Structure formats: structure tokens, C-alpha cells
Length: 453
Image (cartoon, rainbow, N blue to C red):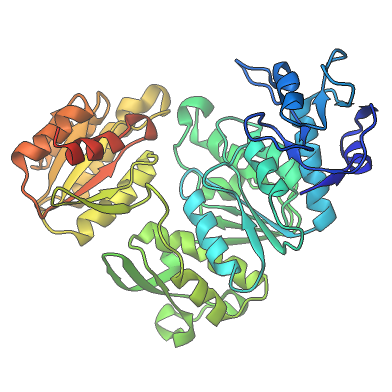
């Protein structure tokens, strides 16, 4: 996406020095910058991109954004803060091309929901989305500045690690519609309480224009300070017709004709299919259905879009290694997501082996959160044949609770010990499920199995 100098000055109120003429793309990385780009240096706790302005010029940059007077090029756009300038440029583009903007946040499921929404809306609209999980303020800017000029719908995933971060993104995104998937315990170690987490997620409504679509959650209802339309959905509103490995079929009310008609009396046209398992995936898909109808899509378009959705990397990723079927769901974990995904696995697979690792950022009550997760799974599946392997100091507390319900539990200190145990003691043909926070690096278990270590 290119901008004239006049547009950049209008967006950022930059002080222009030198003779800059033409249309320019914005680059924040000297390693990938192209000849004729404008370099916008970002700053972090341990780096200052302005120290590389000379490198950008040597690579062919036409000029640089700077906050200092001694920028090593005569062509500069001087601004008080480069990140703010980046956000202002993104907001300028958002207004100039004026797509329908959908903001998505939540403690878990936001990337999956983003992909489901994209799959649905792409059936009718030219749609652009946040890449992977690049869901901070920089990722927002990259998303906006990479969208095509004839874009119709822009989907922005919004992550947060603290208070005020979602509000910052939504200030510049100015969403027309917002989705909050849930407000659970992820990052409770940083925010201190479940109420604070819900407040932070509800920041997405600060600059919301039209409609909030959110999980039917009392904390979200309490803190969603928004006077516009609110739609709340729940797995309780769906009637699950069939669920098996890699497939779900369910009935959900048609939002455009929603009424008090019992689900059992719903028309056949309310049936939907997903090529993934799990009640939590069904619940995530309900927000995509609601949004599709709000944007005037037909039932057939929405159903077709949901059916095209496929799992994303490290979310229920299935592969066969040394004769073991391995389901890797270890991109991230918190108590809610671990309970939901483990429940789905245990419901659908015979003689399952579950490998659980530490869940991070749970604060001073992290031990209790791990114990409670083990107790939940133990109570729910008491009597089922299953083997549990726990990895890490905190995951041991999950295993301690599972042992109380008669499960076969083995504990390991690291991934190498775990993979060694699998190779020495488990037989090919079984299915293994991996769930832990990203910091546990459970992909090492898979690599160790591949290498036979």
C-alpha cells in the first residue's frame, strides 16, 4: 500500500524535510526494505530502530521517519513517536479504503474464531485478515497496510498482555463489529483477577460502531460498556447432532429470525457442519454465524464457509510419527482451553494417551489452577481407560489430582524424558494428545520421536 507525502503528513502531522516526491510504501525492517520505501523505525525495550536509518538508506530507502534532529538522511519525516505514527498511518488507510472492520479478541479461541470468520465472510466479500497470530499493535498496522485497495472486510485479531493494549488497537481500528470469544484465566498473573481480564477484553467496545457479538459470559456482560447492539451466544444454544474425529454437525438458530422456537423444531436450514471436532469449536463458530447474518449473508453462504474451515498450525494438528498418531494442540494453554480440548480428545478417542505440560502466566494461584484442572478432568472421566504423562513442575499438580481418580499417571521433568518413555513403553497405533503453554516447547517431543531419541 502506497502513500503520498501529503497523505503521510495529514495522517501523522510529520515535519517534512528534504525533497520527497512520489508514492511510498512503509517498511519497518531494514532486512526486507525495498528501494524507494520509507523506513519507519520502531523501538523496543532493547532496541532502537533509528540506529539503523543509515542502513535503510544504504539499502535504497527514499527517506526515514525520525524522532531526532540528527537523522542520517536529508529526507525525513519527523514525528514525536514512530509507533504512534505507524498507528496513525494505519488508521488513515482504514478510513481511506473504508472496509467493514471486524475486531476479535478473547482469552482463548480468538485465532481460531478469526479463521472461521474469514472462511465464512470470504464466501461473499473480498476479505483480509490478521496474519497468523500477529495480534499486537504492530501486527495491526502490518495487517492494514497489507490489505488490497479493493478490500470489503478487514478482520483484525486483537491480543493483549495488559490493561490498555486492546483499547489502543481498537482506537485506531475503529471496528464496526466486535467479537469477544470468552474471558477466562489467561494472563491472570499479569492482570490479577478474572474481573480485570474481562475489563481488558471489553476494551474492544471503546470505539465500536455497530454490534458486539460475545460469548454469553456474566463478566463480559458486566463490563461491556457499550450502548449499541449486543448479541450473546453459547454452546447451550446449539443442538449437537453428531460429533466424531474431525467432524461436527449441529443446529443453531437463525439470528435473522431468532425466536423462542425449541431447537428440536428448527428448520433443516439451521444445520451446520465443521470439519473439526470439539464443542468449543462449535461455540466459536456461532460468532461467525451471527456475524454472517448481520452482514446480509445467506444461510447457504454461511454453511458453505464454515464447512471450508480447517485447523491452523499447532491447533489440533494431526501427524503420524513412528506409528503414533499425534495430535498437537500445544500452541498455548490455560485452564479453560485445557479442560475443553482434553475433554474432546477423551470423548472421541479409544485408549488415549494425554501429555500435559505447564500452563504459564497464571499468577500466585498457579498451583491451584493446575490442581483444579486435574480435578475437573478426573471427575468428568472417572472410570475411562486413559494414560496421562505430565511434564514440568506445575503439570505435576494436574497429575496428582488425576491419580486420585485412578488414572495411570507418569511424571517427567523434561521433554526428552517424555519422548524416551513413549519410545520404550508405548506401542505404535495409539493416539497421543499434546497440550501445554507455548513455553514448554512440546514440538521437541515430536522431533525426539522422529529422531528416535
